[in-house]
Amino acid sequence: MLVWERPEPPDRPVPAPLSRERIVQAAIQLADADGLDAVSLRKVAAALDVGPMRLYGYIATKEELLDLMVDAVHAEIRPAGDGWREVLRSLAEATRQAAHQHEWLADLIGGRPQLGPNTLASGEAVLAAMGGVDLDTVVPAVAAVNAYVIGAVRREITERRAERLSGMDQKQWQATFGPYLQRTFATGRFPALATVVHDGPHLDADQTFWTGLDFLLDGIEARISSP
Image (cartoon, rainbow, N blue to C red; front, side, top):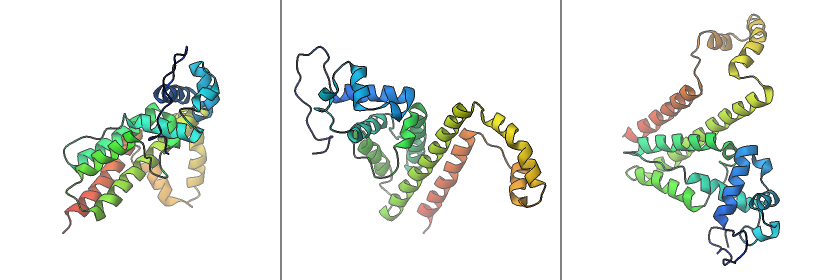
């Protein structure tokens, strides 16, 4: 029986009452502070001041705990709006905000579909908004938006982590490696890259995200509108 359907143990009059919700929230706090490496059943039990064995009545494995954590964060992802474009844009924005709030989420989203109730509710909202669109378009369109958002937020979170690890923000990194690129471009071997670096737009993370998303949504709209 999956964790979503498995009943919790009955309440017991003990000094530290437990529930799956309390366990998951403790795990999320650990992950928010120190990443997924800080999450284990033993560490969560210590944070709750209980013995590790008590957690196994609620959660059988760390994988179940991670699934529950992802689903709990999906409670923050509630796509809304008038029409499919607004809802897909809302989905992208809410997912990005959740990943910025919980950086570890970027390591867990993608891959096989999440099956928790909050995740299913988010998917239901998106698909309901696209009810007037044929399924041959809906399925790849939603998949494309999800793939774009996952890739974008992973890139952004990777940049954040690189800044913390190196001690250099993006401008400092560019200043450090700029002379190397100038010497390399001066060889004439990479004219297209040189043109982009010298003359192309230099968008910040927000501009890059929203511009790319609009390109994608424009393509979906063109496909929906085509006869």
